[in-house]
Amino acid sequence: MAEYDLTSPLLSPRPSDQPQTVLTVDEDSEPSDQSPSNHQPPLQTHNDEKTTLTSSNPYAFLGSDAHSVPAPTTVDPFRNGTPFISGVYEAVKIVLCLPIMLLRLVLFGACLAVGYIATRIALEGWKDKQNPMPKWRCRIMWVTRICARFILFSFGYQWIRRKGKPAPREIAPIVVSNHVSYIEPIFYFYELFPTIVASESHDSMPFVGTIIRAMQ
Image 1: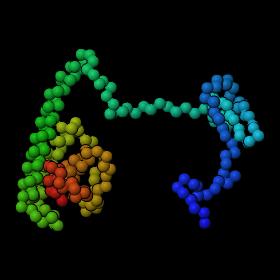
Image 2: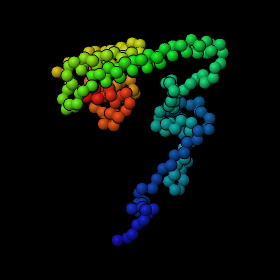
Image 3: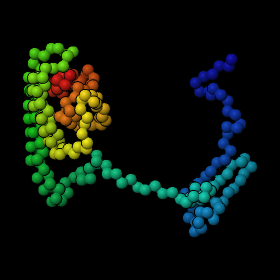
Image 4: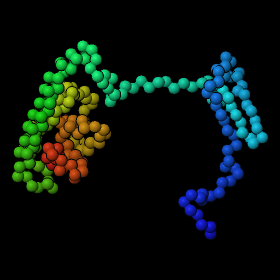
């Protein structure tokens, strides 16, 4: 048996695997005034069975019109269109939005602190992690749920539109949702208060790990 190295092919190429036709499209050619159905692109045949195609429409030999791809219209939310302060409008907008930003930061910090304290009270003295928490501990977590909604408000989610109504837990006890950002866990914590499926390493995260333990 012949020995092969990493650079040698395992199978030798067969003559039938070689390309028989090569199409070359000249993009710099002038468009023709004739319709694609009546226009016959010039074909040049060589002895080695290679064919050269020169046409402004690469689909003309199929009897099809030229295809155009529209420009993308999606706005990139991560691109800053005004990286520098230019004009009076931008300066006034910054001055007016700066107090709002500070108020949102204060609201976020206050809600995080209150929710953390309420969660610590609900977990105080609870060591049995194999069984659900008592109802009185779960009622304390309502304070954390309200704080989660105010945290979303501080992020800019003043109103969240809901379509439909979730089924009762007796009918559909499992919720499967896409997780594409940090917003979904906060919203579902406020809306449904579920028992989430998460990695054990999340338990060591500051603030968030305490809330995850309370969600069992």
